[in-house]
Image (cartoon, rainbow, N blue to C red; front, side, top):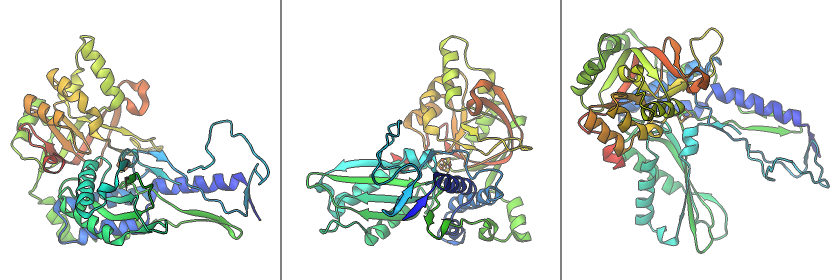
Length: 438
Ligand code: SF4
């Protein structure tokens, strides 16, 4: 019999959460590196992989977390029948007082993006033939889109399995679906091959009248770690602390290539008005890679709700929402001596409902975030001459501009330098994601 004090589990969880906030698994980093070395990867795949590796390298310094989005905390515990934990024996029954279920799933912080892109579909046996299953999965996988930050680890669980009732991994379908994701064209966010690093397909038994299908992803903040407590001690999986080994060596040739790169459009935001910026962007097609320098205004959910109140009360949009790019983001906690905490784009789709109204009121003409957007936004951009830019990271100086009482949801003014972005939706009604997402 092994007795495990509650404090041991608390310590193990605390160490695990500290590690996964900053470190990734070596296998995940190796998959990012593989994208850099794959001649079939698109330039955009390689660009995203490189930025994610650089980000992981900074996060491994254990000051800034790998992603600003802490998402949902999940700790999954399994206890052997000869293990006792504090307060409970085989013969006691205790009311938790907080409605906790008997099974407590509590191991890692997953991004909100992954949590929001986890789906359960109740289908029927009619799905279980190659053609139908393939068409169904392709349609559903496409709807995951890019808002949970690919490249993904994709998992699919299908309720049809071994006649003995055992679960098994379906390796043929894993290969088949991985190939399907490579041919979607979405790639690692902005076009290419690497929508997914890998695919798991698990087959389980089902009730005769139903066929549940679960689809979920683990995002680029692939925060997972395993721990165990045995009679020999308390153990935790070793995550990678030396991320630099996955980065390519930078040679003088690379530096020359970077500085003379001609496919990146440099935009000095402080030297032009909003109209001039729109005119500049209008001369490039979707997919164009930009390098932004200057002032950007950061506003997300609550800030948008408050700006809508201002429009509806007759006050109108604040001038800063008319003169600047609006970046949908929010900072994580600021470490001592730093300008801000980790600061990355949030999912744009949540702000879609505001875009038409804000543009009609003379603001929000150029927005910046991650993920695809609805037809509503494409139509508004075409109608009012707006743009949506996609990005994956950030920044220099940060200061609160408005709504300080809302903490990370306040409106911020930031100065960026060579901030990478792509034109995703333009003023002609073109949407980079249209061909895949309909
Ligand atoms: S990588 Fe993207 S989806 Fe994942 S936690 Fe960060 S913001 Fe959310």
